Length: 416
Image (cartoon, rainbow, N blue to C red; front, side):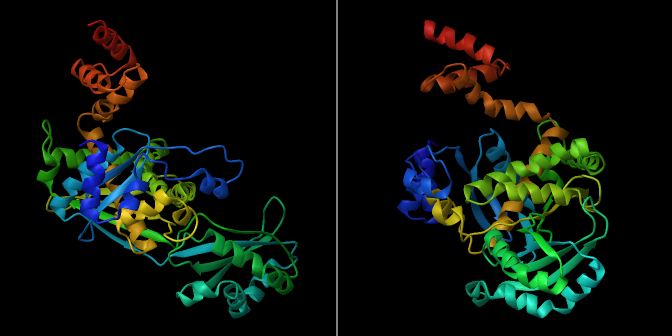
């Protein structure tokens, strides 16, 4: 399909209104007057291709998933793996409560362990003061639910105490909420401890806000033209085994997972940098950086993959409410809560990882990627309009997806 036909198909499948479709088209969705209010020193806006991943079934429900990304093969790979996953019932997901953690750093203490004891004893007062700052959140069932206190008795600047506020942020990402709470309780904390509060800010290691996705794929669904399903499954498991023990492989392995996650986070107006930071920190929680996914072969031969990852996403506040395209992307997905958005997003990450490992276990990563990259190569070589598809197909046929080949073929085309 051409883009206009795809938009019509998406509108028909999802039932979203024309204004949402318009916001996802090539018409400017983010007006300069809105952009100027979002960040500082605005001079314009910056665009990325917005695609739709298809075939996703998560917890028995079908989804179309918006993905904003510049890299060829990402949307296609996720969609194809989602199609294969349907043969095993699709993806299953679960998530914990949306708990974010604010950190309050307390310095200048002679008795850090005594200060910790005093903070724990004053738990109810601290929670009450934190919750006094956001009555709307409390009315929605959220708010500060508990505290943690950690002592670092030896650091470059001596001992310090870190107070954590554990806050249920409901459908928000939660950064502004927890930061405001941390700042509001700081004077009270200084009174209790006799120390000096320095940092008062959230942690992007949202390890109490976890999402788990799993997939079970029958052996026959994984066969390719040159490999049977059992061989592909074994190759995927072997590739993952290296990522579980070698940080050099794990970095690339996890980047492939984020190839699926980041575009959804970006398309929905969420903070992809926070998600990236949390993911990689979580991958290092054992003291060694390793794979975020595990792949196993069940007794019946089915391939089973799991991904557990922190996922701090919101559907209210921030760019999700100011960027028209982000609002339209959320409508397209049809999600009703931040947890649902997070669960679908993690399913996409698992699909993307399966696609990369399947390619590595069979034909190699470059063949499919470069085929989808051919249009970019044609454009780089100077092709325009109908020339783009013509040159892209020609360099694929010659099995030389390079700018030099594209330029040679384009020169011949223009000479005709």
